Length: 324
Image 1 (spheres, rainbow, N blue to C red):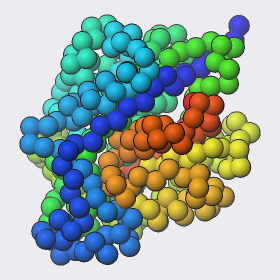
Image 2 (cartoon, rainbow, N blue to C red; image 1 turned 120 degrees about the horizontal axis):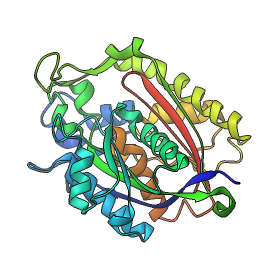
Image 3 (cartoon, rainbow, N blue to C red; image 1 turned 90 degrees about the vertical axis):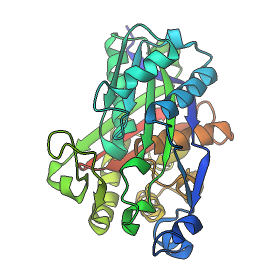
Image 4 (cartoon, one colour; image 1 turned 120 degrees about the vertical axis):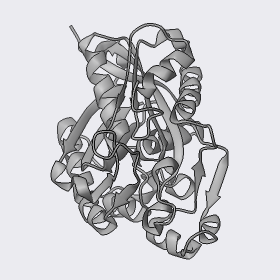
């Protein structure tokens, strides 16, 4: 018998209406559009409205992914939601999404791997689908990072934005997948670096939400090596290469990191999907946001080989290679 492949059936995304430009930030803190663009490539980001929660963004992205897939909400029996900014400490934001979509079967849970969250969630959903435990999964990355930023810290508040992206996966017998599906994923963590990118609060430690803190130079120093490490593993596992992939959809943290990683791997700029200038760093939402944009504007087409990668707090990092 053939094995099971997790095949992409649809993507969707959602961005809050409010746009915060670099010029807007320059009126609030000591920064400038030139300073931000030169160091990060970011020109603007979206900010959730008052009363607009992570679950609201996630539901809208999920609805669009379901419509794109041609599925009803009731067809889904697994929701894995990657987020570092849940609506509440508990229950999981995923169960709120489940309820809002009207799904009453299967399982729904959150996964926390910061900016690597979507890749970790994708790999987790893939494992469950391949096990036969579930048939169709909704994988979501959704964040309201604006709620944990220190707006006086120009080193971090200029980097992040809010948004959500989603993907629908279906378990398909390998013989019927015609080469499509998630081909491989590689996940890593190294807790020795946890204090280089963290939030200085939490229920157990301070009983507060806290704010994001980052040692920017340290994160940058580790990022390129970690990213390329898991991509080399993905190529080794599949026999693919920078030459054979159609698209590279990296985590949208910093243009310099993306450019350096692509250059080190020999991936030409025309194969890189870049949205960091429009969205900023939306953490776990950045990859599905970029992926959905490239699918909807016609760049990513059926049969294309797409490489995903991310690195985030923890440190966590990972890659996934899929044929859409």
